[in-house]
Length: 121
Length: 168
Image 1: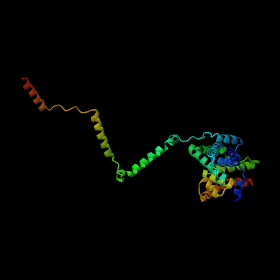
Image 2: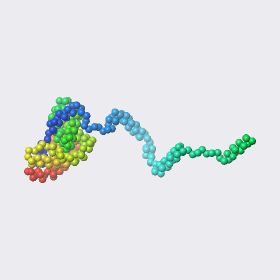
Image 3: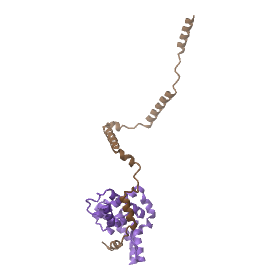
């Protein structure tokens, strides 16, 4: 220990304030609630620890059982995505606003009129 | 345990107070961290069972309590701005003005050290622990503790030498 260390080490430390003794021991004995609350998610997760563990295990098993090539398939390009979105929009438009059903062709109409006239005559 | 709790307080609270004051640089934070230490002891009466050196173990618990508080509340950042007000309370008031000036300078010089160096300096100088024991308290290796101490002491020497020489 050098000179500075000796000088510093000789400086007496202050004691804890006397009034703390009662407060702290009383607080400890009463099992007072902790001054700092746990994170908001801890009380939610704690009772379901087993469920979360099971879910994570299932996810891990599914991931491990998925073939590597499926997992590593390259993502669709922007163009492909746009094409898929356009197709979906077209299908949706057809679903909610279907085109008018096609009417009878002119030839069929003429034949039908002719049949009706023959029948009336 | 209740009687034991009082005995533990009487034997170790002052040391824990000083250590926590050096760590937190804040009286209210020190109080709360000390409360957490004793709450933990009250809730787990077997915590000290089989512990070789109570003081070292309690310093470790106190260090963990202080660090948890830092993490949870980010009080460290707040303290950076206001530590100067309360750091001098870590030492007893001196009987002479010159000595008081020196003690306040020491408190200020220790306060501006990084937290991990403050902890090592306190445990080495004022608890008289070996680097091995400091490593146990802080959860670091012996060499890390020794190098942190060397860095810290160099900084303290630089800051305090002029004043120390002037007061001699």
